[in-house]
Length: 187
Image: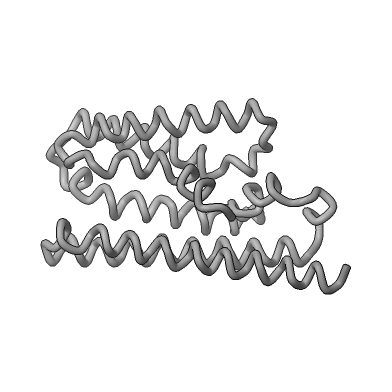
């Protein structure tokens, strides 16, 4: 996994960060637009639907958040959009696992040879990687909820996000290296 593909995958969520809660309608609309552009580009490149689970989920959530941001900009839900966002991402991760289509597997299919897609090792690795991301997203939602309740959102919110996203990113890299090593050894 390359850092730029990681950042691009979360770009719809990144662009909303600078928007204050009373302007979240605009921030979420921008995030929705970015997600739709990514969906269009991925579709044009021939990406299968399972490679766009995160993009589809992002677009749906950000459209709903945008509507809420314009209709009720001072709502408690808007003020807790970071908690809601990571809760939604956790639901995408765990929901894709429950459906037997872990969201990371579709993304990985764009980067590995087709003859590896049906292997049990490939599938089980992506169940692990998606579980890691799901736990990280859920943990971030809880941690940011605590930060919000303690009224530390400005001081602690960014480091919590950075640490909370760095850990699954690094674990993903480790898992990918491990599967490559196993594949190289058995080949």
